[in-house]
Length: 179
Image 1 (cartoon, rainbow, N blue to C red):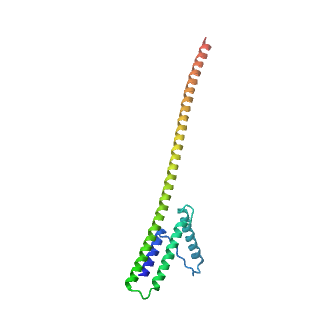
Image 2 (cartoon, rainbow, N blue to C red):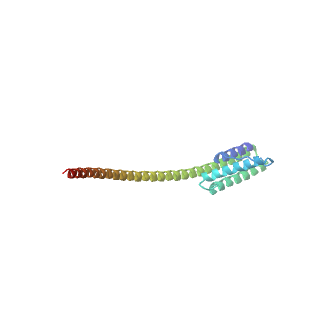
Image 3 (tube, one colour):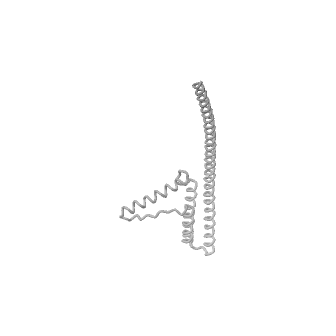
């Protein structure tokens, strides 16, 4: 039962960490394999740092996990040292350990959810700011396009007027030459 409880704890902690893990063969003599293992670890560390806004882990979450692990280890030592107690008493103590573990998981889950909400709000705010900036830029581009179109229209009108005046001057000059 205790092994199952430990296995469950490992799975839950791994789940809280996004099922991220890196396995190492510390005894390998293959240099290529060693380099690949280190690269895998560094890639995972960089991904975690990026996801945590530049922090490799949150101090609060780490402290909570460490506290829970220490408490569980202490409780397991007490259970291992229980001799002379009835099966019912040992069972009650194990149930108490399990409840404590469940409470610990709930606190950690709440902390993770809180961090996730904070990150989501921050990203939504950043997205809204970027969308507002994009809309402002589009508005400015549209105003510039309208001014450009207006200038082009005025230039065409001036060109047409100049062409008409030039044509009138030619006609007058041709009449003067005929006279």
